[in-house]
Image (cartoon, rainbow, N blue to C red; front, side, top):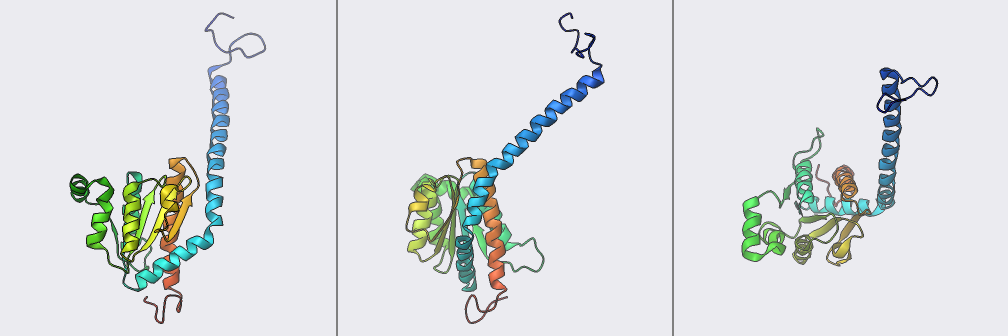
Length: 232
């Protein structure tokens, strides 16, 4: 068969009709997509199962957050890069719940104001970008929630350290092995997305902070769990 004359049917040496060639190509593509999809879900199974295994720790974190909100505390969230947008996402979840009837709770992302962040970075250094804001915006009943994809963000760690010194409840969402943030004693609660893939870390973090929001409200709805009176 001359070069370029088509794909042999395997019988008479004549090329397959165009429609048949399309069907075969579609089958090969479909098989490839199925394999890729299975592999994608398989990569997510491990980090997801490890998160489920930390259910008790997550529940304790949510309870401590609910207690701080009950005491008129607010949530202050911060991170770099992708986690900076997570910080904004978390704050709006608490301030403006998408579920009708859920109570709005005070929260603020420390990544919103570019002028403030760059001004602090210029005059005090990047490591102080969140510390400076906490010192001027936070009070002892508050919650400091720092997010880092690999647990190695100096300014996030500094924010948690200073927050703890000020009396805040400190929580870290980190990835990989947790890095220096997970190992630091100034962090009250650490939740680790056990993956080195930043995409998977992001996905686990999104799940975690939606669970944090949900369970904080569960505690608010259970009389006696937060103190003598439960604010509804």
